[in-house]
Length: 418
Image (cartoon, rainbow, N blue to C red; front, side, top):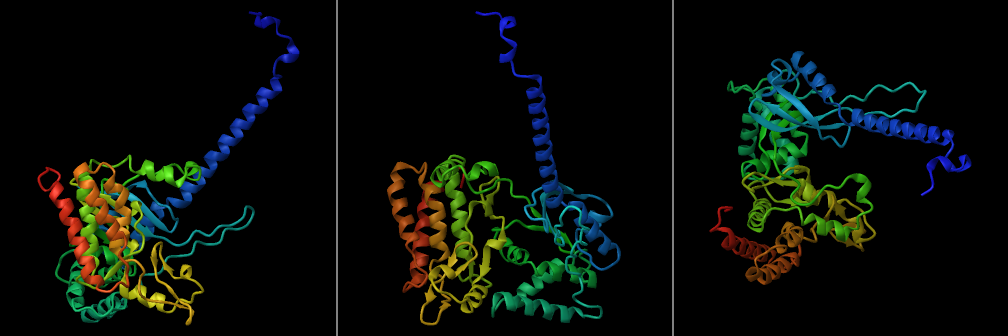
C-alpha cells in the first residue's frame, strides 16, 4: 500500500475546512443547547409557582392542608418537571412518605421579539372568592350551585357538598376558614380536580393528597401510559401509524395482567354510566391518560378527558354545523348535524363502552389464550358496534358490559393477578 507520506498535498483537505467544520459543529451544538434551555425555562417554572402560592399563604389570603409543609417546613417539594404548557405546571414531588404529582396554575408567558421590552407576565386570577364576611352556610350554597351548574340536577349533590367541605377543612379543626374556602373554591374551578374527587372514592383516579391555593398534589401512578412507547418528537412524524400501533402492543404486561387492567377500564365505564352524580362521557381515550398501579389496577390520570353529559349536551345544543365533522367535543365525543336546523344534535353517536372496546381490542387480543380468542374477538366487535341512539341502548349496554367482564373474570379469577 502506498505510504501516506506520498499522498499529494493537493488531495488533502485544507486546514481551513477542518476549522470551518469544527466552528459549525460548535455553533449548531450551542444553538441546540440554547433552544433546549429556553424551552425548559419557559415550561418549567415551579419556583415561580411556589413563590406565588407561598406569598399569598403568608399574607393570609389562602390556606390548605399542604401550605405549611410547602412554605414553612419545606417537607413538600417538587422534583422532576413534566410540564407541557407554561401556565400549567406539572412536577413529580415528595411529601413525607408520599410520592405524588404536583400541579399548579400560573399566568401566561408573553412572548416578545429581541430588542423589545418584555411585557409584564399576566397574573393568574386572584383568590377573591368567597369574600370576607361570607358565612359557612353561604359558602355551602356557593359550592352547591357550582356543582349544579356542572353536573345538572342530581339527587346526591348535598352529600357531595359535605364531602368537599370536609376536604376544605385542611387542618381538620372542624371548621372551614376563609383562606381554606378560597383555596377550595379555586380548586373547584378546575374540572379535572372536581371530576377527580367524584371518581376517587371508587378508586378510578389518583387520591388527592393535599392542596394550597390552586396548587395540589395527587398520588403518583407508577406505570403509564396504559400501553405503548413514547417516541422522541423527531421520530413521531417518521413512524407510520400502523407501525406505531404494532410497537405499542410490544410494551405491555402479561395477558392476565392486561385482562385485570382492562376490567378496571370497563368498571370505570360502568360507574360513570348513570352513576351517583349523573352520567359522564370520556372524550379522549388515548393511552397516555391512563396508568396502572403495582397491583395492576387502572387509574385515570387525566380527569380532563371526562365531561359531565349534562355539560356536553348544553355545549352541543348551541353549536352550529354544516356537516357531522363540525359536531365534535374534545377528541372523540361526536354527535350528528341536523341539516335542516344547521345545529348539532345532543345525542352522542358512540357510547363510552364502544370507544373503550375499540381501545382495548388490540390490547386484549394480542397474546390472548387460544381457547378464548374467538369469543373475546366476537364480544369486542359487538361492543364496538354499539350506537348512542340505538333502541333499548341501556339494556344492550349492560348486557354486553356484563358478558365481557364475566369472560375476562373467568380467565383470571384463578390466577395470582386477580
